[in-house]
Image (cartoon, rainbow, N blue to C red):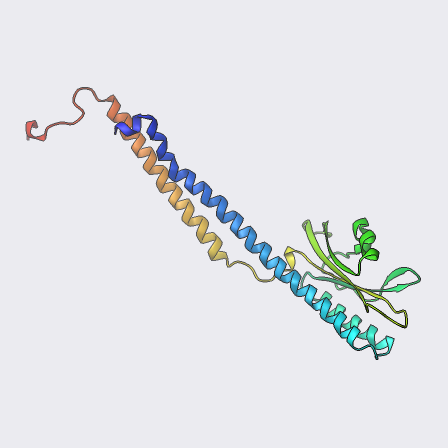
Length: 224
């Protein structure tokens, strides 16, 4: 009991500090898992655009109208996927004209409305950019966009720009609820038990200090 009334008593706070550190760790771990799922979705979208570009460039003998049909159909199919943006543009007299129909859930999105996108795209053959925006009736999100010009070298002068993007809301796979909730419930119960034990020990230390005379009694001198 003397430990409870010395400077070493603060060691009792170690379990609480450890639990707080665990809470921070698990919170960051869950965030990293969600980011990994988002990047997996983004890479999947990038591969889709790159495969489309490879298809267009390898079939150089196709008529221009056939190439447009391939780009049009593939991009509209991609845009119909849940919370995924996709658009195909045709360069006409120095201006990018949207040639696909948008199938947005609640709000339209036009990447050329954002200066950072409009300034970057003409100078690079392909690349990525993150645009933050809040769709109508939805929460703010960061849209990870990938763009690519195709075909790389066109003897006929046709030029297309394909853009596709995903946000955290595009991820349909998620961490099972029982995993995250189980972690927090377990930590909450452990925290409550440790807190009760610390309070009990502190109370016993207080009682120990309030007693006068011998701290421990000899049971052999007790009357039955």
